[in-house]
Image (tube, rainbow over all chains, first blue to last red):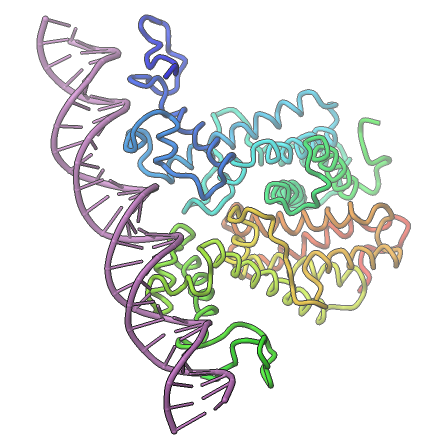
Length: 228
Length: 228
DNA sequence: ATCGCATGTTGTCGCTGTCAACATGGATGT
DNA sequence: ACATCCATGTTGACAGCGACAACATGCGAT
């Protein structure tokens, strides 16, 4: 088997890029997470098996237990990776969007939906019925998670007088529900087959977030958008 | 136990209410569905086992295979029951609500959310990652499903000039996403623990649907609601 | 060079999903 | 009335899975 030699370490006296150790395998923990995501994506949720994940990672059936206490712990790692990736993608899209509060909010919402479309296994694990506790997002300290980004977007819009006044928590929940619902409908394939491409999903997400934002706009203000 | 003839194929002199048979057990098929729902509700999704379901129904471990080809088929039966119940609850709430288009739409949305809060196992199975095909709602002929009720609510609102003009499909998707997202967040326990009661959920759903509807209202029309 | 402990392996157990063969009894036709 | 049929339920079996214990290996600190 021409797989990557199990030890890339030979020398590499400089390998502190954080994360876990890399003893025999290299980075089995991450390899298991990746294998789990690929397996869900290819074979569906029912095919997710610790033993198959181990097989794909090239180790025996009990090796995963050195990194995860049980199957649920592996899924939890997938979920945490998903929360971090989602927040990162939202921040990235917001960075390349116009800086007005409403456009920022729209960018956050669109990125939320697109994350789900691009990473269905992660999204399903994050919000699926696989955990006992609600499972907090828990990103690296100093980084805003997806929910915080929405909260900030709503607050900025209200502060600028572009969004209607009122309990910001209610408006935030409206925005969150809309993007979460749209993302869920995409992932669960409830939408007409017409919108199956990534571009179609993006276009739909843009239409929906703009529609919502214009609905939540301050009736007293002039326009519906702050970038045109 | 009131018996009911099994097949409608032969003669069915006086028993066309359809449904399945009831030989030895009575109505094992429905008993298995009920047991599955109770099991998910009590022990969680991971505890759902065909053998445990059979145990709870008082039959041996292979009996379910006389009614369902496999575990997925049992879940499909749960999902179909859920779709029918959801549509029925929505119709019931709409029947007791004011008859204005916007109040009807709001009632449909609130009932959608409340169905999820009241029947989390059904909701999760309906929209979970448990099936290969999208799984069409499929209600009894002549009865509108949940989506059709939302479509009709939007169309009525637009026809009455109470909702903004535009592609009705876009507005319908907005409404569907909002209620579906709110329902999903409730079921997956992503919301603050503050709103854990049924009344709190209902109040929140009412606030959210009204907020959405006022956002989608026709700016040309006078008020936001048609019942006050 | 040595040793310890993290990492990976082997073997095992109970449980599950699924199938085949068998048993039972209610419905059916004459 | 009665023999029969077949839908329903049972028994037994097999492979695969999650999880654990005991064992083996080798990296890294000493």
